[in-house]
Image (cartoon, rainbow, N blue to C red; front, top):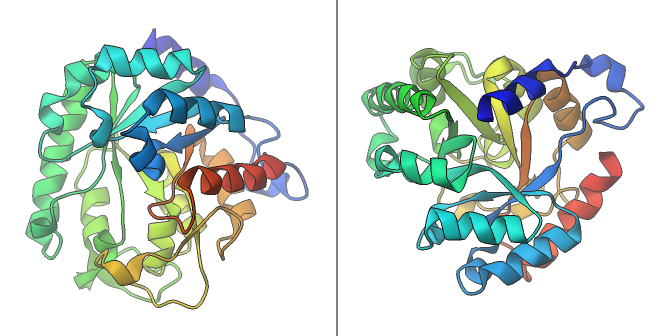
Length: 295
């Protein structure tokens, strides 16, 4: 069943980015909008069915789960999501226990198991990222055996310059190799894919659309959140790294990002906002209002 869905998705034709100028961003291939439930984590951990109902009423069609709601069994969690009229194609899992979660993910019904981040002790050295790359290859192989696919979700720490010549100079002028270089170069492109968080890429100084082109067919999922103007870049996810805005309220070029997403065949788009100034559900609603005008 999973294989058939993937076949149908991959069989759909894609248009080059140039053909999208002046048109609706997803005119040829409609990709439904989703929400990463971490955005509404406080509410979700108190009354998940109510939050799911709110998300569906806004107009979203999919959600991506995260570790904080895995206190529910996979069957119970899937039941609540489906009852709300939503789909759950992807879930985030912690690095520390992802290897024990394949049966849970299968029962939940996701297509994608996404590693949300690697441990901080591994952030500052090539050896840490090489260890992660080796682990990702193993998880990618296991995921395939379960009929699933594996991806990695970035923040800003992966883009810290670590020395020697690298690939990720788009938008920064930095030519030193980074942890993200290692993850791209030392993981199997048939087993390990990427979920690009466009905010965190921009926060590290990169043009999200340029980075999307660099990832190419390995980019399968996107996290959509905007970035306020006037703040310095960062590589450490500290308190000074969070300049989050609802989609359309910040500085990112959403037409370019969405056009590139269609050209590359990105499969899922999840709105996320790590922190919000007001109620999280209001930020989710505001992002949907903006994106629905483009899609």
